[in-house]
Length: 225
Picture 1 (cartoon, rainbow, N blue to C red):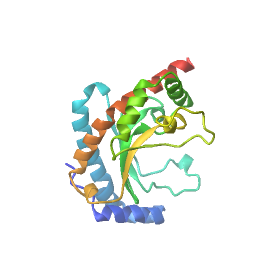
Picture 2: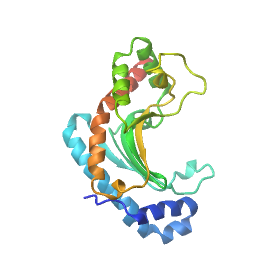
Picture 3: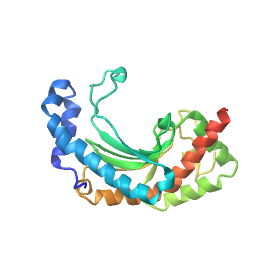
């Protein structure tokens, strides 16, 4: 069962940020396993078991990221990531284009939410068509998001706006990707077993957004056929 992260976790994350090489990592590998990987795996398993039990029809699986970067995609960066995350998602091809629930811990703090890592252009085009056609469901979800203070709309905007849609949905209309998340510093909650409760409750709140995002992805895929 997840008991919380520790100051050692934060120390390791900053350490790998500034010492991203194999020599340093090998000297601190036990610390990585004890303070970062094992608590992240325990947290992911607890959140998955509780959330999936409530929502078995979603068909979600737990995926815990690796700290090792893909050697083909270093692009001048070190061989290790300076963050670790887990996601709850169906096992399907091209999952980066589909919505996932996620949690991530990094040197700056931690975050969780729902969204697409790399939304397909067809998905975002489906969103704009929905808004242009009246967008009753997305308007309801946008108002629901505005009434609370935990989560915010995130994701990259297009460099050139795609158009106008009114003040409520304008931030959504011009997004290049879709994400709703909460960002917090490395605080007392992330060091507490209560973090699991927070994530489960948060994912429950975010479920309607997951369902809507997933419907957009399916619509976008149909448009490509």
